[in-house]
Length: 172
Ligand code: FEO
Image 1 (tube, protein in one colour):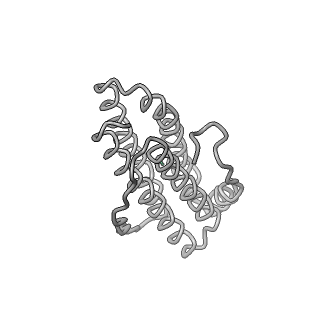
Image 2 (image 1 turned 90 degrees about the vertical axis):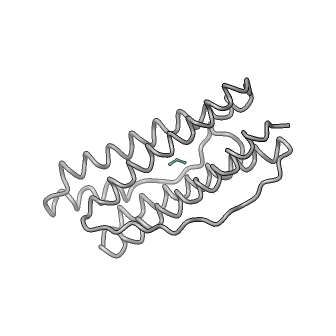
Image 3 (image 1 turned 45 degrees about the horizontal axis):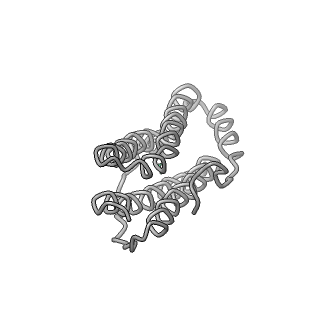
């Protein structure tokens, strides 16, 4: 049986991961509207990955005898004025998610909940990758996004992203 505080934090994180997916789908909606289908596609896949994160946490709780409960998912309310705005917002959001995961990890450490620490190890690594991906997007947009040819190429590059469920992540 999991410690009550840990169970609550992970249950709450499920909501945050689903919100992340909702947020990234909102980014995709924006880029679809702007005619940048590659950017939209990239965020649509990112939204799928966020749902996977939520499912991994849900499975972990269930497998540890916890009754999972869902709260309302917040409305994405970002207003975009420039094509780079969702990329900047995405990088900021991932840094925030890292802080949430780190917080759960710190609680697990304090409680000597080694099982949960091991479960979270994958998420710690994943957050490192997600922050890097988000930062790379910001950098590339700064470098190439200012002229039509650069933007076109970047859009093509992002369109090539393929969704593959993680082979190394926790069960869903
Ligand atoms: Fe589930 Fe983008 O972190």
